[in-house]
Image (cartoon, rainbow, N blue to C red; front, top):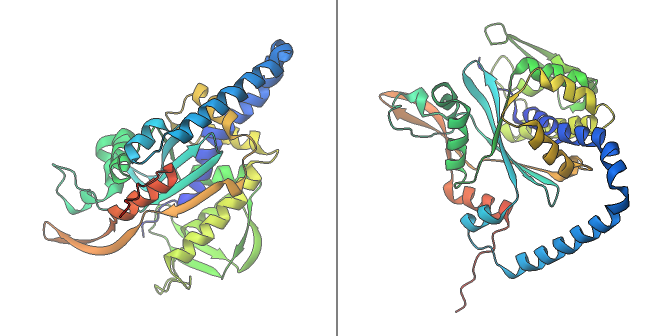
Length: 333
């Protein structure tokens, strides 16, 4: 049974690397910087506030009515997160960070999302999780941009199962309420699955956390979540909120140190520092979670029938317009 790393724990690692790494570095260097700038601090702060006020007035006068214009004017920083299983990116998530509002929007992209690439005609190659094997991280960034109405994707971050386990352990575990007794066994899975987590509120270590996030159904094929995948996503979101609360505590330096060994990214230290300064004082309430809209279906490709996730282009556009604050023109009769 192939299981992917679930979207929320991956995103938490993104926050650690791209935002909180910068925050921590910022806090370390802040004292030295202030020694040289104490005399001019209030004056600079006043100038910045005045500039921001003028910029805000200017932005209000200009109506952003298309996504193209919104992308051009926005200061958002966008990431694609990949949870790796071998050469497949079995978890893909789009993360959009607004440094002005200090808000993060997250869109989970199912690994079975159908995507056509010229020259890749096999049924398995029509799934988004196959893109990394042939085009690498840059290819995944391009495909995610295509799906999400041409949104710019600035960075990628990659992690595997072992990284998730180690990073959760670095915060001392995550407290969750397990909705039912989770029990499942599959020695053929990679890595093998032996899940046995009792029902109730408890602190899960790294190993148990990965099991919690990987659980889908029992050995007779019954999905224990009453509302199927939606229930599982909700449980994962609650897990992430708990993790973020822990990562934002005094344990943050340990999370950062652990993350270095298990993450691959094109986020530079300078960029992380810049993002981190903007991410200070953020909490779990500043994160918005959603999933790429669409439906699951079976589709025959070259005489082979596979299950695919077909995304809804109109709904995707609406989500992106909401994230980027596009104001649609109202036609007067």
